[in-house]
Image 1 (cartoon, rainbow, N blue to C red):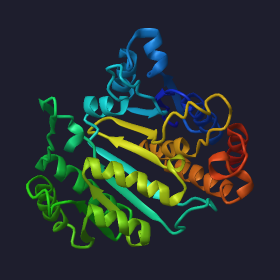
Image 2: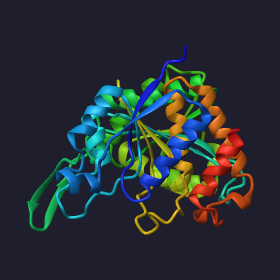
Image 3: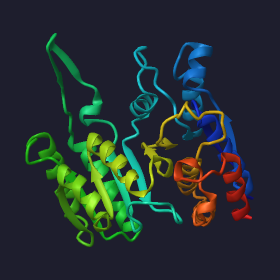
Length: 335
């Protein structure tokens, strides 16, 4: 008898509601043994409870340990911290993974890109440790620790070994930030030495940005700090057609949250124009995480097949297929 997995589902704002409903349809078509515990965060939650992340959201994640999250907008100038940052801090979701791959015949700057980015998710400048020195001066403190560095670099090398990857690129700016980035690089070298079968390279972040634009094919697995990872992951997404094609996984010791990394796109919400590819790829990664690898492979293969026909592109990819029509194509491909 197959075990049923209950997943916390956070639809989010804007197009989030539409694309997470697509996931529910596709999960049913796959026959995946999943039930959903749907909880509200974001603007609807503020309207109902006055909280961006109500207690019910934390309760669901605490109970089920796995969540799928749609995009959630952070109200500007209202004192609310980003939902992503709040959840990462609360659950110590230290490992952020973003696979960057070209699907089907999507118009991309580079066709043969297959990079997996590992981004440390809890410290660096994103720790938010700042002080106002005077009205004209503010300081932001960059925090790098051995523990967090060992954790993210080990995860990258372990992934490389498990998935038959040959190279790991370690990205820093250690030539300038000799203490903070220097510590990250020092620890990364120690970890790399334990994996002699994997080729480790060291790349300065500014050079990495240029190399990714010119020759991204030379990279396999990339591991870096929080800020650099945030910037480079968006650059990488641009190489393959945009953020609408990139999933994200946030992993802690006992909690995992999977998401589409694009925004809530309020300008097209409710119009049936959203591309659900990123959230479906995030769902595929979630399926892998809960040991439903066969379903994950079927879903990725279906997306690749559908996106091999330019007639199946949504508006963001230069086509005119609606969200519902695209979903029908994916479900038909699964069948």
